[in-house]
Every structure is written in structure tokens, then in C-alpha cells.
Length: 456
Ligand code: GLN
Image (tube, rainbow, N blue to C red; front, top):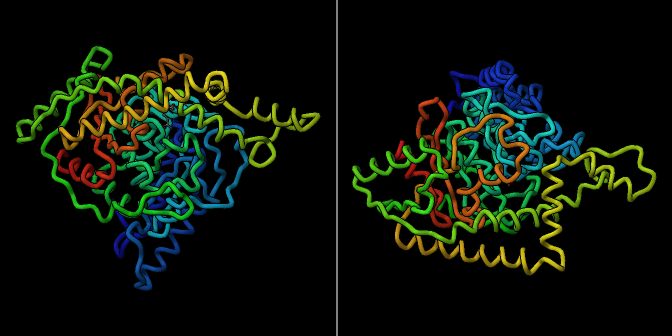
């Protein structure tokens, strides 16, 4: 990535990024443009460079921030009406780390409200268009971030991935997207969706950039007790020799162009001397059902804090406290948010807890074990990210089950806490971006990125 130095100023880099953001305005990528703040930071970095002072590893690098990361610059809305007007008093740990190295946030990006969705159509601010076909979705929930990188507006963007929200939009827009091992990057200061599944990661144009960002952002954070000690910068790179292919995903429910791309990559790996291991992972068929029980259950709990008293939007005409809660939540949440709150409360209710939540928790354990068994037979797994390339705007937005099926191949990684890296693998005959994901055991993130470098 281009970093400010004696020859190119941070101000130049930031001005170029802002101009591109303006040029692509009708893609609806940003919920906020940080013009004043970004130029001020750029001037500070340029002054440092002029004085010959040491600058960070990301000096002057413009980046886009998914609008569910808290920082005092602009409102943090999570693309939801209920958070409109909320200016955060705190800064997310990941944002602090990036900015300590000199990265400059030029704007906040659009998402499905509260990261609920797979297309960025559930946003209060309207959908974001795909980078290569404006009639198609950007993917989601981190659609704005993926498109900002794909259109080369910024060098990188942040994302959160609870069930595929980094990997799927990355593959829909031809960029790299990493969901790290659970606990690698601090979740502190990111609007919580489902806390046992949420992972913080990035969109980049190269695996080298991903490596740099991970070396900066990873590590233990006293403010997030689920973070792991910094294994990333200490890990020895494991050399992959055996690549697993999940046979259970090789069927008609996967688009022909994606299966073709997977076969071509598999043949290429074979010709390079890799051993291809056919895996049978029948337990994975329960992943989607388990996810759509555990995830709404955690959503119902996390979203209970939005009551019109503490954050953002408040309904004005309520006659008493109870109707204030009710009116604010009725007006402030999107339909998909409400659907998840209702499903979540249902599966947690005393009458149905054993039948749904407990069973899903057991299925989750089986999924963890299924991956452990698979990684005894192979080093990494190569699979599709989603069953299809970018679909048309409006095609699935009124059909929640069709939208949930988008996550068929991505959610099991979140349930197992293992890393997945979406890599671009060219385009379909109709010009749509195709992506595949590399999956590794827990804490293999660095080796996974290195493997992607080899595959370039
Ligand atoms: N599409 C999935 C969902 O709607 C994943 C979203 C995410 O990873 N934030 O839950």
C-alpha cells in the first residue's frame, strides 16, 4: 500500500481518497465523510515527516471504517435509525491501534443495520451497490467497506464478521477479506451483534497488506477479556502440504461458476505438488440452523440496551417510560433487527430453551469437533464462501430464509472460532467477482495469509 513519505504527502493521499469517495458517491458506500478530520490528521503527519520525525507503519494511509466501530469522529450509527445522532465518547481498540500507526479514517461505511444481513440492503440509509455491477448487491453486512476497497477509494477497510460479513462481501467485490481466529483482534468498541461469534478483521487488495494490518491490530486487550495473547506476531509459519476439499459442498446448490473456480484452483494446487484431501463433514449441515438460533439469542440480549434513554434516537411523543421504550424500539429498529430479537427471545424462553438453544449449543460442539478431525487430515481447507456470486438488488431482501441461506458456508467457522480468508479468484463469464475461502485451525491466521501469498 502507498504510505506517506518524503515524495508523497499524507495530504495528497487523503485528498485523492476523498476525491474518489465523491466520484463514487452514487454507490452509497459511506454514511459519513471525514473530510475535515482526515485533512487535519494528514497535515500533522506531513509536519512530522518534514521535521524528520519517526512516523508509523501506516503513515498517511487512508482507510474506511465500518460504521459499527466506535470513535468520536462522526456519528456511529451501525446504519440503524435507533443510533442516529450517537457520537461515541470512546474509541475502539482496533481503531486506536491503526491510528497510532498513522492510518487516517476518511469515512464510515454502510452496513446492514447492526450487521444483520448479507446484502447491505437492511441499512436505514439504503443499499450499497456492487463494485462491478450497480444492479447487484455489495454483499453484507460489511458491503460499504468491501466496495470502498474494490473501487480503490481506500487502501483498506475494517469489517466485523459474525457469520460471513467480511468474507462474503469480499468475494462479491474481488478483494481479500479475513475473519481471524475468535479473540485475535479486540472487539472493544465495536457495536456488539453476537458476542461469542463476532470477529474483527479487514478488507485489503493484497495478502501482504492483510499481514501488515494483522500484525498491528492483533493482541490481548484488557478491555476485551476474550482476546488471546498475541500469537499472531509470534507464530511460526506452517507450510501447507495437504489441502482439504469439503465434498458435502460439491452439489447443485452451489453456482456452476463457483464450482468451476474451485475445481480449477484444486487442479492448480495438485499440479504444484499439494496433496488434495477429500473431506466428508456431514455435521456442517447443522451449522446454519445452529447459527440462526445462537446468533439471534445473543442479538436479543445485546440489543436490549437500545431503549431511547442512553443512545441516539428517542421517540418523542411517548406518554410514559414503557411507551418510550416501545415506541423508540418500534421506530428505531429495522424489520430484520426485530425479527432477530423475537427469534432470540423465543429460543431462550423457558418453554423452548432445551428444544432450541441447548440443542444448538450441542450442535456447535459437534461442529468444533468436526473441524478438529478434519485438520488431522489436512493443513487447510479450500471452500466456496457463499453458494453464489452477487445477486440482484431486491432479489432476496423480502425473503429472510433465502437471505440466511447465503451464509451456508461461512457460519460454521464462526461457530468453531476458526479463521477464514476470502481470496479473489477472478470473474464469472458474466463479469461477476468470484471468491473462495481458505480455512485453517485456530491460530493459523498467519500461515493462512502466507498460503494466500503463494496462491496469488
Ligand atoms: N449474514 C449473516 C447474518 O445475517 C452474518 C452477518 C455478520 O457476519 N455480521 O447474520
